[in-house]
Amino acid sequence: MPISNISKQFGNAVRSRRIASGLSQEKLAEKAGLHPNYIGKIERGVRNATLDVSNRIARALKVGLPKLIEEAQQKRSNAKK
Amino acid sequence: MPISNISKQFGNAVRSRRIASGLSQEKLAEKAGLHPNYIGKIERGVRNATLDVSNRIARALKVGLPKLIEEAQQKRSNAKK
Image 1: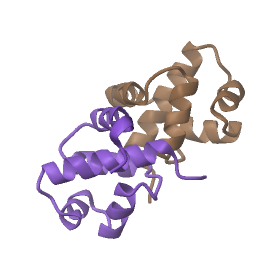
Image 2: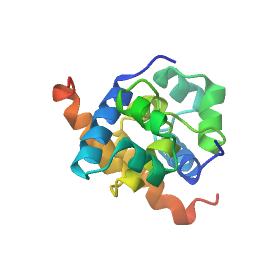
Image 3: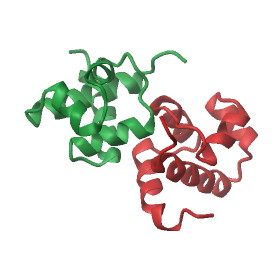
């Protein structure tokens, strides 16, 4: 299936939260139990994360998954960074 | 990756909402642009849905994805049906 808007929006929200938390991609990957390259792909919106992976990232960022998705969908308008 | 708790929780929440909306799996599948078998697998928690697929299902159920995930995670305790 092609890459969806929501994946790009989610990637932007993850990157914002990660940077605000002062975490590197490597550190976030370690906390979430994922490969650093995979975090990079999620942030760039070039991978469609599963609910499971999204949830692990949200937990590593200490935010609920519903909240993180809400942020992602709200950032729709300024997602071009 | 193995099937996660959140996939099972999400499946239960989707099934509850679908039944409450009076939709068959076939009808929900049609609205979401997915195969009926796939909806069945999501509901049974035997497939890890991507954010994109989850969002399409949420839209077809006329609920926001954050809200649907919230319901899924709240139903953790009575998910054994």
